[in-house]
Length: 170
Ligand code: MG
Image (tube, rainbow, N blue to C red; front, side, top):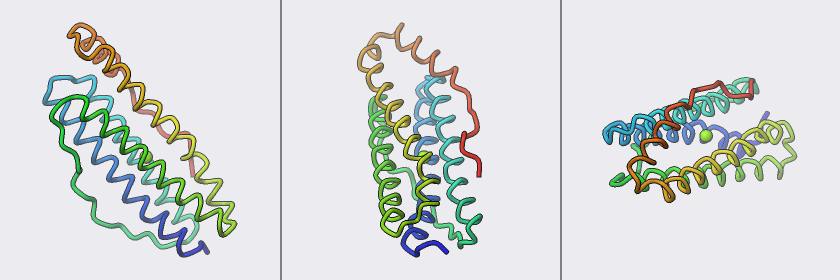
């Protein structure tokens, strides 16, 4: 039996991760319309990863014989008028997700739920990488985004990202 508060936070994280996928699909679609197919690819792969994250929380609850309750997924709450809007929305969202993971970790720690803490360790590390990726992209865009040739090359680079399944298996 999981602590009710830990259970509720884990269940809510399923929804948050699916929302993340939705947000990244919105961003991917923005870049598709812009004609920046490499950026669109990058965010489409990111959306796939977010769906994996949701499924990990879903499976973790099921494996622990805890009820899964699926809630409605919100419309992506982002206004994209220029490329940097998408990149900063992405960074801000990852910072928010990091705070959510930390909150679940703190709740698990409080009730000595070491199993959930161990499960969350992977996400703690993953969030570090997500923040780093989002920050790197902002830096590259600040440095090269205003030069069409460089933007073309950055787009090519982001087009090479391929989806790989998560390293965490439940
Ligand atoms: Mg995620």
